[in-house]
Image 1 (cartoon, rainbow, N blue to C red):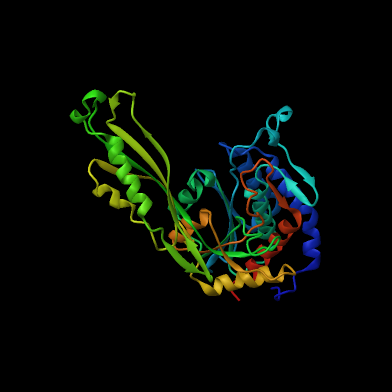
Image 2 (cartoon, rainbow, N blue to C red):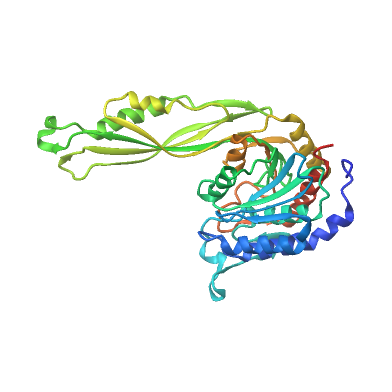
Length: 379
C-alpha cells in the first residue's frame, strides 16, 4: 500500500508510454452508434493482461466488467464508458475504413474520445491490471452513456452494485488550469415536453376554436417564473436551471392551432426539483418527462477524503473538492446506492468538440491516482 505522497516513480515512468499507447489504440476504434469493436478491444486486453487473476464479463448490453481481489470484501469500481458522440469529419480517417484520427502534439492527444472518455478508460484499465486491491476491485466500461446511460442502467438492473466508485469523467481544470480535482456532486438533466391542446378553427372565426398556442404561452410564463433549485455542496452553490428551448405549433397562417408543444431543459441538483408539474394545473396542458438523468452527491466523506488524498499526492498543486455542471453515469450509480466521486483527465470545454484533446501528463496522473485509491481505500 502506498503512503500519501509516495507514488512509485517506476510505475509512473512505465505509464509514460503505456497509457499513451493504450489510449491511442482505444481512441482509434470507431464507437459512435456501434461500440462493439471498442468493447472487443477492452475485453481482449483485459483477458490478455489480467487473465486468470480476474473475472471478466461482457453483458448483453455490451458493457465490459472485470473484477479481482477479495469477492467477500466491499467493492470499489473504476468506471468509464467507451461510446462517443458523432465525430467531426477531420476526426475520421476516410481511407482506413473509418478509423478515428489520433494525433499527438504539444503533450496532448487529439481525437474523438480522447477526453470523453477513452483516455480515462485506458488509465483505469492499467490501474486495474497493476493494483493489489485493498478489497474487491472492479473496472467497468459502459456503452450508451452519451444516449442516457443505457449501459449503466442495464448493469445496475443486472446486479452491478459496487459500494464505491470513481467515475473517470473530467474533473481537471475546475479549481485551476491543469489541476485534477475531485468532483463530489454534479447536476442532472430532466428534459420534458409541455403539450397544449386546443380546438382548430378558421382564423376568420377564431372564437369558434381554442388557441393552443395561447395556452402554451401561459405555460411558458409559468416556467419563466419558477425559481430554479440550488443546494450547497463542497462550499459551492450548485444551481439548477429551467429553460424553454423549443416551441412548435400551428399548421397554417389562417388556422387557429389545436396543438402546441414546448420543450423544457431542466438542470437538476441533488435533492431538489423545480415544480414543473404545476403546468398541468393550466387548462388544456399536459406535461411529459422525456429524459431524466439523475444528479449525484457523495455523502460519504471518508471515501471522498481517501480519493482526495490520492489526488493530492499525485500532483504538485493542491486540488479541491468541486462540483460539475454535467450529468454522468455517477448519477445512475449514486441513485442505486453507490458512493461516487468523479475524477478524470478531461478539462472543461474539451468534450464533444472538433478539437477534442487530453493532456498526456494528466492521463499518467489519473492512472497513478486510480491505482493508489484501489490500494488504499479500505485502510
